[in-house]
Length: 277
Image (cartoon, rainbow, N blue to C red):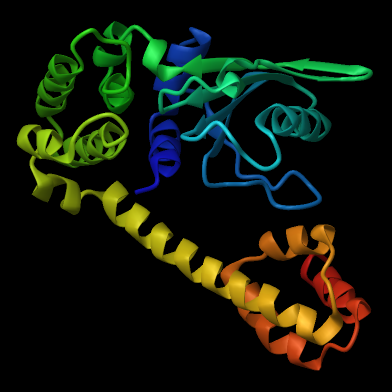
């Protein structure tokens, strides 16, 4: 399951709840920004941009501490692109989901020779579960919060989910909770506390399955193309490989056909230019 996609779904489905939790601000005037921020598409699987009056909340959910490019540099990159595009105040929060001792999850700034950029980090396993338990939209995150008795905490979360009156909302929050709980708890315990059929009926569960299938198709297409290209035009530079990885599944399929007529790197460069024009 995609843990990052689950959190992205929650943040975009319940933006006011995340704004209140992270910025201590109550507002219903929130816009979910769908933007590619210029040159190449952003990594959309775990990134959410919420805009309130003169402020953008940039949320980044991470299961693993490592990423490419590194998280600290990526936060700087997003900041400069958001600032250029919107020119307003930007609050950046990285939420790490799975407990780890990696030094990366304790890093809150990017430092270079002439640059220092700070952002906020939340290690969810250190968070007080009380405010998360009090908000249905945050119940899935509560399952990963600080506790001396994690099993008891999961029982409290399950009880909170069961109290949600609206059926569709209860199904979706239950599915999100079960998915995220898999980072911490045994599958059998999760199944004891939650009804599996509720998860399977939920919108988020079906959406994640569909995205998983698309991701699998993209990985297969990428692997095939990156095997075939060197045979046609020789070694492919890392810069060109990165451009290829940013393509959609239909674009990769088109490239798979087009490369049969390539004879040099220039052919690939020209073809990629047509995709971003």
